[in-house]
Length: 248
Image 1 (tube, rainbow, N blue to C red):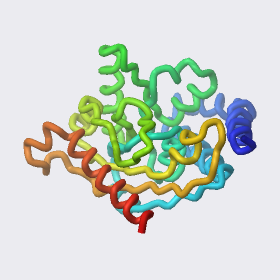
Image 2: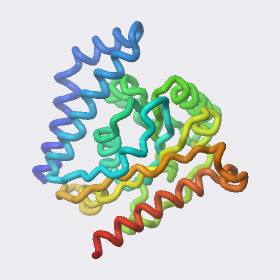
Image 3: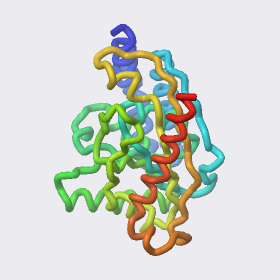
């Protein structure tokens, strides 16, 4: 319970104490969005890594060489825990924004920080609004800022990490229309930090693995039409390997 309190307190203090910095960055963003993004992402990334450290967890990063150095990409991952976001954002060395649920737009201070780091808010109940978010994501990856999506449609609380829900195909249109690669990402061990025994937090061995980028134009037509299913199969394969390695 102490770890939970420390993490929650750390987030609260960050949001409150850095209000002046946030306001300055919001002003800078109007003139130099690249500068505001660079500073905000560095700050948020450091805070997220600190929160993971507080839980006692250690993160192993695999396959970082698979992340294209130039241009935007679409990161696609499984999603079992809030700590997936902390891990992905904290350890991915590339400008990016997460696609978050629309309800987050109503959280003061947090909303502003999310906007500063190029997060997009997806309303799954409003098709028109959802389409606008996808279009915004397409424009974002074209500009060189990557987008991260979790196409399972929410946290998958199944204890079996390899039991990944079917992906929502529509969200991968960001890569298809934006003409950017898809980087499949497998995240292991985050569920065991908190969701497995809420409200208590426990240390866990976390692994984040970036798979080889998927270039859509190089895929057969059948796999292009089912890009979500194809990407999901790559993530499941990585997760199965992690499970096998940890059993050995």
